[in-house]
Length: 354
Ligand SMILES: *[C@@H]1O[C@H](CO)[C@@H](O)[C@H](O)[C@H]1NC(C)=O
Image (cartoon, rainbow, N blue to C red; front, side, top):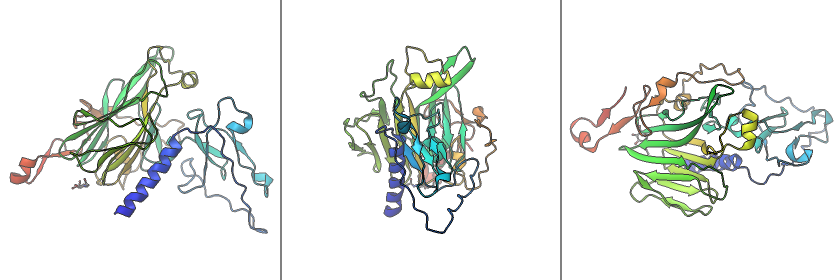
């Protein structure tokens, strides 16, 4: 158990490192030396346009004004010039991406790792498929709903009158767990983004959680054993864990001028639209789990999205609409609140939704 848990943590920590744009230097790809006389094996075919799990990749963190070498990964192999290729990052993640040299393709982290949500929100499900879920500005949607765990996301947004389109981002999570405990993880609004300021806000059962703005600083709940918050960077990146249940990495990021130019979000001067890029790991989901992201973890889940579309969209927003950040009342809710008193006389469980 402890070992498996450690393994999960290691995986999530690796994911977090990848989600962070750190040093802005292109990673060099070590030249592989094929065995003499043997032709290089063909890589396995793409699965829904993506390299299969466990494919090798390098992380590319291009610099903005770098030389060509600095914003492209070089996949040259001395032994086989025909495999040489240069790849840059996709427009959705110009600052950091993963390069799969065997395919000469690059992807955003959020399009590769299961259990992620980034940008205007793009989720990658437990099944590995990537889709958009736009929700609605100013409203809350259940993204995971299970017997003992319910997670809503609060969406903020912007309207671009030129495109007549609303854009949305996830600003906060409302996590309900156990006997109805409430964990808030949110991004603080800022007119102007300052990367040295902390924009993460956390509260447990309404009490703000203060963690020193120092890398690796950690807070552990005394009231709720197993609940902790760890700063992965001094500011704006945390890992929130409930042992045996979940680990959630949250990274507060603004909508940048660059994003705005590329996507034509129509950002206004009065808001940098600070939102959360998220990575989820779940350790104790049931087979009945639902919600925008949760359903993709069901063992028998078959996506109904056209995953070959450039931008598959998960519709059916009304099914996921919650009446508040901590409401467990979305139509697909699976949450069952345990009441200590009911445990004695009525077998334990009050179901608020089927
Ligand atoms: C895991 O889920 C089961 C079933 O929902 C629940 O009874 C149990 O308490 C959960 N474990 C933890 C550590 O929360």
